[in-house]
Length: 217
Image 1 (cartoon, rainbow, N blue to C red):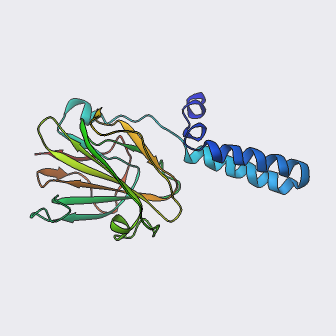
Image 2 (image 1 turned 60 degrees about the vertical axis):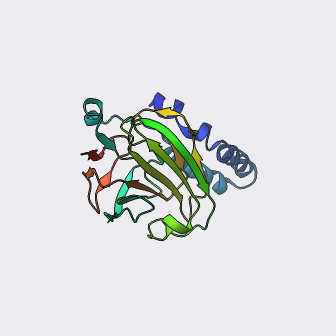
Image 3 (image 1 turned 90 degrees about the horizontal axis):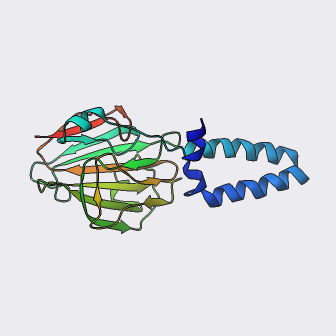
């Protein structure tokens, strides 16, 4: 329980939300008690939303060819194009994060951050396929020691309007490294070459940093 509070991202990524809760809570305490109770409920939800669990993918510890799911949520779409017609990749997996999912993001594999690309955009519903192209998003490209690369895309949704990315270009990362988060409902896309054998399917519930996404062949 102590770790839940000490590692909670509300104190860093949601600090202004915390200060807002304190101010509104004080006003409610002084002038309108029902507002205080509503504020306390929102504070409890914020603590839950900004939780920052430690996750381990056991398979990845024993097999460097294993790719790890970068986010909690539900797999809502899988696309395949052997001619690399998906922005230069052959496969794209989309994971939708509801407001009650953990919103921390993990790196699927070890490697070097080849690029970090932020693109502004709209805030359409994150579960819609077009959100990958239209919404505000942040891409990281990771290249492993074998020269293979993947792209992981954080996509803001209608409610989630802030993307946090904690890595920089040319930074070396390990598999399962916490590299960012998206606030409230959102989506994460993973674009990969054809030589990855997927281990997930549409409709499957996955855990970031723990569920096996696939394996290099």
